[in-house]
Length: 270
Image 1 (cartoon, rainbow, N blue to C red):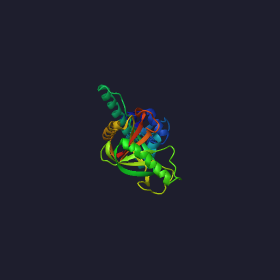
Image 2: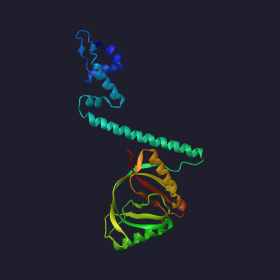
Image 3: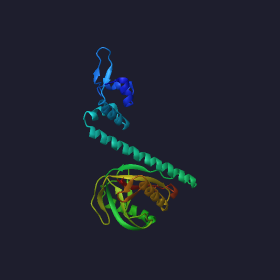
Image 4: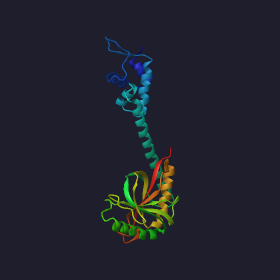
């Protein structure tokens, strides 16, 4: 038998902690002297104390430690803690990438241009038209023409607010000429398919995204940055890229003010 002071030294915890564990029933002494109140512990109780310390080092609060040791949903709590730590690890990895990239750009004399954001895109009902387009200039002519045709054929169909208009890029790599794209416009409800377009549902998806300010011929830099980020942060590409148009020729006088969000569907690589 060990008195509380000796037991605290063996277990590398404070006497105060042992008294607290006794009060809450987490680790009660094997014996308490009825005359002196001295607490005594057995060597076997070191196993229980080591389990408590180990779980504390994993970041569990005392109430969860008690539940785990007493068999009350321990597996679920540990699994939740694992998910929490993995999310924290991804966040730190992302921050490390951003800091290193920032320093690299500064060393090369450039400013930080892109910031990657992970976001959940909801499901959308869209009208879509998949075509091979010569370049972005031709695409800017194509998009309003498709919208006008859909509106004429389906006067009861309204665009979703806030508006979501994007290109789904079906090429296996970034291209700014001879592009296989699918023009999509989110709507409040599906209408009747027409010549050159169909109504369909885009599923919900997790994307890594960056905002690109300026003409479309500069989008290649945004694509390259996203690919670098995905490879560095333990993700893989999980679908066709999207280009979501926020500001453009329809509301900006200068192409320098155009704003496009490049969205890359991703999933954890492992």
